[in-house]
Structure formats: structure tokens, C-alpha cells
Length: 440
Image (cartoon, rainbow, N blue to C red; front, side, top):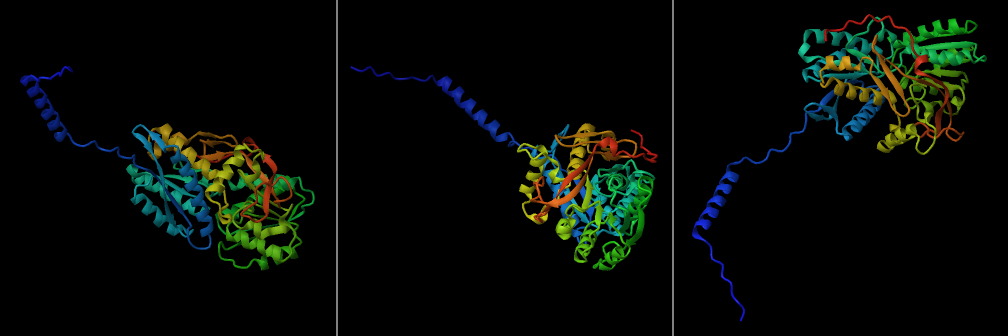
């Protein structure tokens, strides 16, 4: 017969168990629900530049580059500070590329207490912003702003107008001109040069640097034309090209950018003008397609990097980097990659981490002397004047199918190959900056 086991519970033990259960239930009811972790506040970057008007395409290209750089950092978790990881966040302010509009937008930026300002598509705007930021930071020390400049290349900005609150991440006009005139120095076939540029501080400086450097390096060269035109106002450059042809120019030096460059080279192509173009920005928006076949072997540009600077190997860091950008922005019209903007955002993030703060003064001190190094680029922020020292490439325009051109520009069928690599130490020029620093 199966034995049946009956369990008996002691009344006292049952009472204790019930009491314990009720007590735990009461505690659970009284305890507040777990509070979800609050994301760290973003570190804001305000971009003041032309997002409408004749140079809107240049401003939009900058937004793509900066956004890409920010996304790369945020994908790594953001910027690490003692209180956690903070994402970077971009806000844009349209200045229509005007000085007065820029100052209005700066007030909007400071009202929102954004600590980092970026701008670059106008040296005139940059000069005005430096003055305004200096005054603002003195007036409101608890709401300071640090100005990071990605493209305004007037040498004055890191010489007589240098400021503790301003850092430039592009080569100055004089540094770029030095690279161009080294190529001209070696080109015996160039004897008559026409200078043309935009009529503002940058354009005037480009012409000044060209005259001075050519006189020193090639005194036999005749400058057969030297003129400035209103920025963003000329719709037809045919009359200017006619002057160049009439003067017998065999080469042109220009710092033009944006539509002023595109329309200039289109007019040269339409007129059958065969002179060489030594430019700062012939690899920029629309220019390669506008120059077309006439530019093959004759058009040169200078920059801190270009898409064909890599080795061409499958694992070439430069090639991989560029291909990742093109994957993010696959449309040909969006193919406009600035390495200096990536460097700028990366150096800013590292400086914030080094300073353990997003305070502009602390970050400025951390940026002085800061070093950036990747698998294909090496740069140092010179403390004396806040000018980034980095290599430069002199590049020549070629057909994409000519060999050595893995990537064309904007689907144009034309790209650039390296003609001369200039190490960082050979790009260095002296500075007249007398930096005034606030107490640490």
C-alpha cells in the first residue's frame, strides 16, 4: 500500500511568513520607480555661414562635412567628460555671407549660450567675427565663445588680427600661394600671368602674395593683368577672359571660389582660352565639370588633401575614409570633401576631453600646441598664432580614365592627381602675431 505523506504547517511559522510577505509588499509600494538615466546634455556648435544666396551651395557642402564629422564622433559615444559622454550637436545660422548679417547671427548664437562658433567661407566675415567675439568675451566672461575657422584664409587673421579666441584649420593664403608659386617657378613655359580675384580682403591678399612671391622666385615673369571684381555679383566673365586673351596671358592665378570660380572657368572654356589656371579651389563645387577637357594637364589646385591622395590599395586609409563619405552622401552633387573640417571637429573633441570641460577658455588652452594624427594626415596647432600647420598637396587636373585617378569630382569624369606633396614643415611661414592670453 502506498504511504501517503501529509505535510503539517506550524501556525506560528505561517504567521511569520505572511507578515514578511506583507512587509515586502509595503516596501515595494512605497519605493519610487527606478529613474531612467538622463542623457548627457549635447555640446553645441553653431555654424554661421551663407546658406542662401549665390554661395548657398558652398555653405551646404560645409554642413555636410561638419555633420559627417560630428556623426563619426557621436557614433563612438560622443565626447567624454567627468559627468559622462556628451554628443556634439550642430546648429546653423544663415548670414547670407554678409558681415552685418553675421553679427546679427552671432547675437542669436550667444543668446542661446552656444560655446563654439564655426565659420570660414569669407575672410571679411571672419575678421568681423573675431572683433565681435573678442568684445563679447570681455563683456560676458560667463558666456564666452570660441571661434573655429575652417576656410577663411586671409593671413591677417593669424597675424595682426590674431586672437586667443580664434583658431584657423586651413592653410593661409600665403601658405597656399607658396605652394602654387613653387610649381610656377619650375614651369619655364609660364612667362605672362594674369591675376584676377574677388574684391575683398582675401582676394586682395591673394594678389599681393602672388606679386611678392613671383618677384622673388621668377622675376622674369610679367604680370600682364591684375584686377578685382565684386564678389558674387558677376554673371558673365566673358569680358574678363577677353582681357586675358588680349594681354597674351599664358597663365592665370586666382583665389576665386564658389560660383565666381565656376563662372570664370566656364567663360574660359567657352572662349577657347587655353592658358594654365593656378587656383586655390579648382577642385571645388562645379569647377572640374565647368573646366572640362580644357583643364586636363593645365589646371592646378592646392589643398590639405584630395580624394586621390591615397595609395589605391584596398586598405588605403585615405581611400577608405573617402569611400565612407561617399557612401553617406552618394549623390554626385554632394561630392565635396574637406579633410580640414574633419580635423577641426576631431581636434575640438580631443581638446574638450583634455580640458575636462566645454568651457571655451579651457578648450582654447587645450588646443594650443595640440597634435592631430591619422593614418594619412598629420597636423599641429601652432600656439603662437593659432594657425594649423599641416601638409599641402599641389594637384593637377586629369581625366578620370587616364590612370592614377580613382575618384573623379562630382561625377564629372575629371579628377586630380598629386603633382607635388609639400610636408608640413615646408609650409610654415613666420607670424607677426602678438597673442594676448587671459589668465589661466
